Amino acid sequence: MSTMVEEITKSSWNKGLTSDKNSENYDPRIEYKRPTAFKKGSQINLGRHHSAESIKKMSDAKKGKKRDPEATRKTVEKTRGQKRSKEFCERLSKLVKKEFDDGTRKSWNKGKHLSREHRLKIGLANRGAAAASSLGWSGKQLRHGYTYEFNKELKETIRARDKFTCFMCGETGKAVHHIDYDKENNSEDNLITLCPICHGKTNFNRDSWMEFFK
Image (cartoon, rainbow, N blue to C red; front, side, top):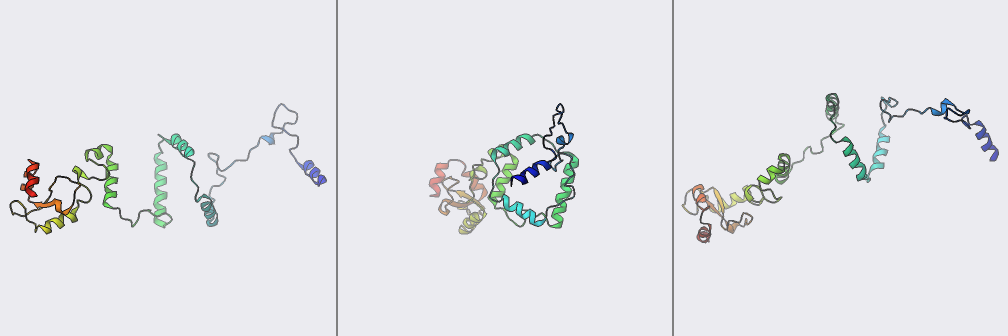
């Protein structure tokens, strides 16, 4: 065994050599570093592609692993404020379009339908916090304090129950009024059909109107 080790040691071409130019054992070959695929401008892997088996192995190896939050933060800090060139954006756009056309890339939300609440949240987020504040958004309420329960279906139920007739004047009624003025109390006993004119009258002297409808 020791003889084999000695033979290997003797056959080592760089034994005793150094990259120090001031040394008598200096050899320029020690300084040579093989270029890697990660070096900017390197074309060592240009045109090469991973096999399907290799891609699956890499995918399986990453499953269940979470990226270090500190590494994510550093990446965000490093790239913040950077702008991609117009040429890069055009190339990326063409690549993505090609992948959609040949089926290698698929839209994650294709065929999915968002709920009304979800769509409203997205709309408010796109408009910004100022718009959400102006609409009185609290996560539960819609514009002017009305909740999701106070929807078209509930209003139609109340109108049909009252035979589309205003409780006050007997004319055609379309407005649905909260008797106790609590917009979160959507019990059918608390809702009544009114015409637009009579509904406007209920905005004044609320206490007396509450007694009247009871």
